[in-house]
Image 1 (cartoon, rainbow, N blue to C red):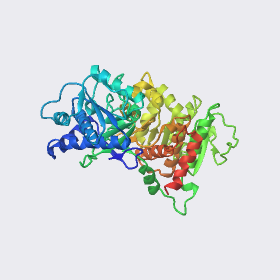
Image 2: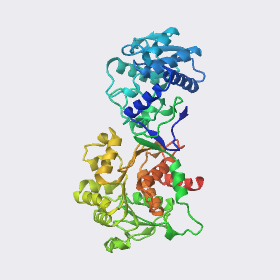
Image 3: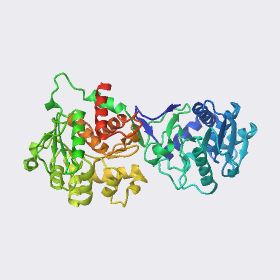
Length: 504
């Protein structure tokens, strides 16, 4: 049993059908009730480890195998001397099932089993959520909703909440709550497979710290997606290490198109980030450029507006990072970039301009036919605009689907930012970032990411855009780990640059 986040190596992700297939195959290879006994023991061990001086536990058990895991955990905690209250919710399990075995064993051990929610204790050291698990597909109702509310009351009273497999009331694929009631766990112990919903969107907050136990079953790596982590940083550094003869001309050029008046800081962050990532030369293409050196960053150069009107062959191979604080003033230059630059990163206002202009949308879609890759880095509201959806909530309801639809619509690599950023490229496995923290929830960190992608891309022109995006996103998140409070965007650049030397 190990914690999953922060992730280092890639791990396979499985949705509910894939997880059930793996569970069924594992059950066929073991004597009856073997896996549920292992799972229940693992839950008890984690509960005891989380509260080494704990004395009392409340177990909320549903009618399925998830409830069976909780009942077996209750039996083991009671054998350790804990006072255990068990709340049974729903009908009795089918005779002969794993869940029925767990219930019979609990009764045989003399556990106190209740079905009256109002009589549940108001405080405990640990509350174990074994109510719904993997199979939940609709909003909890009736006694199930009441039980979830009772767990919430225990949490509010200071009880540590441990969810079994997935927090009850969330969609295992999307991580979103299925209705008004969902368990908010401090810890989740998941078995056999890692589920996407535990690592993106609201699921990452609802699951708390995620632990994994394979129950002695070999891990299946043929999942629907990947959870990637900090190994992507080392992988990029190994593949594109600088030689002793390296010089700026070998490390590529980046131009940041953005920074309209009153929003110049966004372009400054992106350009500084690209420079810190290691790009050879970085230019700022500002709508209202006075040609003066940038404060504290004299290394950054200016890109005259007239240069866009020159033959695209003179700037085609530069990496263009577009949109950071650009407003509508960059529209004309953005059109030229989409028609002429071979590598483009679209962020912020560039995405808003594309969303509002069919001509720009067509230009973006045609880039793939030329073999020119594009990386889009929307936050949920920008993604909603690109998809023609009324609000960011529509995107957050299914982040995986939204990112996939964007990637397919524009034949591009998409980084849907947010908790558990999603990276999607047509014909590649969907990927979810396993690094990062809420420290990144500050203004300008998205500009930093866009610039860092551009800076890495300048040095590695042959890299697959999906691999590039995963490396940059993992880097961005890893730099924020360990920061208890908000991390300012300019400080984030320094933290990301520090990882160059730390991983070298």
